[in-house]
Image 1: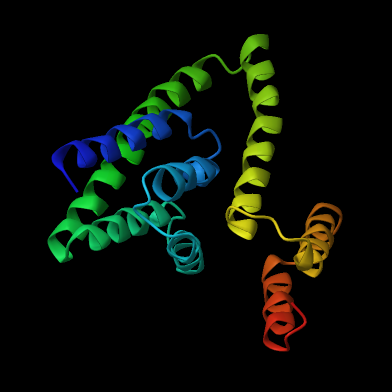
Image 2 (image 1 turned 90 degrees about the vertical axis):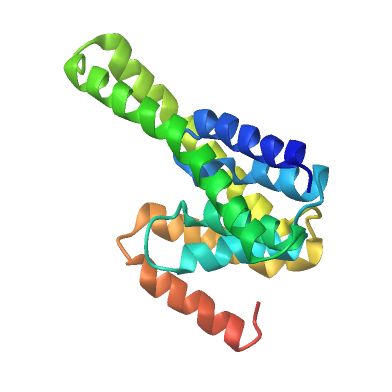
Length: 186
């Protein structure tokens, strides 16, 4: 990768940071477009595995960005470039959104009784939900949705309904999904 490529990676994450309403995971579809489809710095399986490993690990879910940056750097050279990719991705995704979140939360708390502030908070909810659905779509399908995966889609729909309408703990659903995968149902 050239210095311009590294700068492009940093600038892209700086921009995504500003757009990451609902968390960094909501920008995963655009990360996929940029890293896999446009730049070919990662393959589809590398992208999906990076997100899945980071989400399964304990800790903040933004760690998937670090793993994506690490894998981009690792593909570009070795451990030194992997560290550079990790650093650029994390600085890019954390600094703008962290600064904006701190300043906006201070202002929002001071003005929480204003009608415009309450309306803004209520209006953001559907946007966050749509971004999370888009993220799930990209992670489940990669670039090509397959009709043969209808059992996966059925399980996702049933799980979403259970989360919405019941108080079943998420770990039970994760365990059920793991068992279905282990027995080859999915």
